[in-house]
Image 1 (cartoon, rainbow, N blue to C red):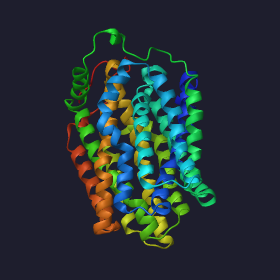
Image 2: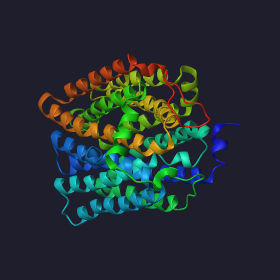
Image 3: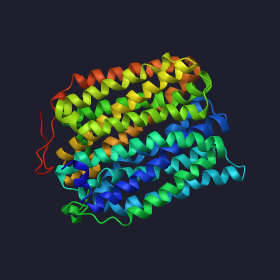
Length: 421
């Protein structure tokens, strides 16, 4: 029996999966629409776009570790539902302010900052929720299905965003995401987990510093998880740079439309679909460590094509191929990495492990996005992209040379101890 029918036997997971897919479609629309609002509607510079992107992830830098502790102390489902409903309201402020003709860059940054705080709470709970919905041996395929739905959303979302932006304008397109969060929150409220969401020791006295230290120690003192985390942070620094510059490069340097920009992003989604579909086979064939390292090399290879693109049809093709390869690397990597991280981490540390890695990864974007904008403004868009590609090569080399190449999944009997290579 294939893994997908087995997962369909768990109604709680199926509802969670559907809710996640719905919100991802909206998020893929907003991810593009926000930058179009900044660049086209508000005339933002590269530095200002970098600040906007950094604002989205600043809460992860400021409060990420605290979020992990909070998630390990409380049920995850109410956090997920509350964050989704609140994000629907916050995003609705953007089209409302545009309709009232009061939309400005400071207001947009403020809305994005609040949205980031809510997303931090959601993300910390989201990654730690599936272990209560499916048995431990189903975690890797469960995360693979989530990655597949995310990839499908990334495929259709940017195209939908480009069409909506062209027909209705970017602020109104963001309404799609607001509605998607509303639907997701309602669906999540109906989920009934298979197992308790909080570790049994949650009624014992709590010590904030000790709990944060436990999460950090678990992640960074591991001979395999530590290098994975450190190089992931570096990956996100340069990903933040490239993402910020890419929109400016396509719109201002190559003079392509928002619709064509959406098409190139859709190619990333196509690559993610293929990657997520084959991630289980890929991980088993190569092993956890080699498989993830291979994906880390695939990212700079794909991005290498982008600064080579020109303004004609050949340029669009190069951008699409580059995004396709990038999406493939993410689709292959994410389910394997998430399955590995969850399999070796005790249940009582899941929230802190996920929040530590995810929060510091997103915090790295706070560094990379403004740097990317500054480099774009002072050196030009192509040079900024080349620097981002070089950084991606560095992180791949560092992970390749680390002990992570020996990483393997913990036994399916439970996620109670790390398995060292």
